[in-house]
Length: 339
Ligand code: ADP
Ligand code: MG
Image 1 (spheres, rainbow, N blue to C red):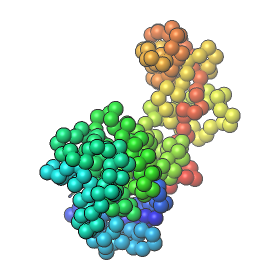
Image 2: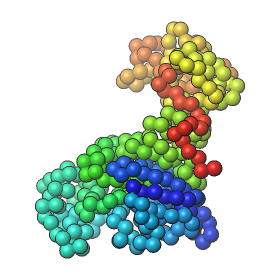
Image 3: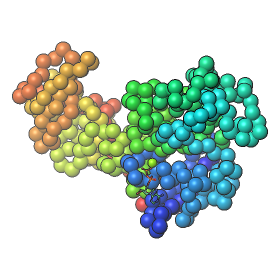
């Protein structure tokens, strides 16, 4: 198990990672999610032993690794752009670390290539592969020596959207199949949700919330976190009272305090809802009609309606809340602040 205790890292006195404490169970996949520049890569590099700590301590399986050089930690690193050896075939790239340790094993290389879905690619050169295939090779190479911890720095960010989504799902399957404990950093909430089971939200060098991914998702610690997790709107203060009333009618238990995050299209246009608004715009998608509705005292809100309904700009609609698509914003038992 990896444990970080009050870890800080500074560059020339400027703090990049600020008093971070995290624990991750063996076999889990933890995503550290945060905007660009918040200190994700620095944190990962510190775990790898590539940046010295200014304070705090890192341990694995109960043993402090702070003084161990990178190659003695038993961790493997994989970057955004894979960084394959251009002059080596796929098989030689994957087997690199095994040869380095004088344990070459063509069988293990074959097994790894099939694990990442690249049977038959052994003799290809990196230049002949697609971006997604290159990342699979990089992953196989990182897994070759069975690292006790795999560190992934934005492993899918360089890929285009469709491919990123497919590889994210594969990445999760491959890591679980190999039983690898993995710490991944990313700025992309979709990527984090597709790959990880644990989540730590980072902002300005600090971890502001961490826990099981569903727990964090269903109760973001504050508005900024909710928005960063992909919620469309956060309603707080008095204008939210109207929406709260709607939520009360849609939920079994009343929701409080009055700060709510609405997932995109948390509101459904229907005949009976307690919220009344005017349609600003309507756009048909293959599944639903997407509406932007101006609700009095609340402002513009995204909503959905049945595909065959005929709402249009200027019309008055009633909205009700889909309780599955809202979250309470604020501190919960699962969340933890470093404040
Ligand atoms: P992220 O990976 O979240 O985008 P980084 O960990 O790369 O963020 O950077 C965190 C902060 O530390 C940024 O302000 C960045 O400019 C700074 N930083 C990163 N690497 C260095 C370095 N080698 N020297 C000085 N400052 C750095
Ligand atoms: Mg980075």
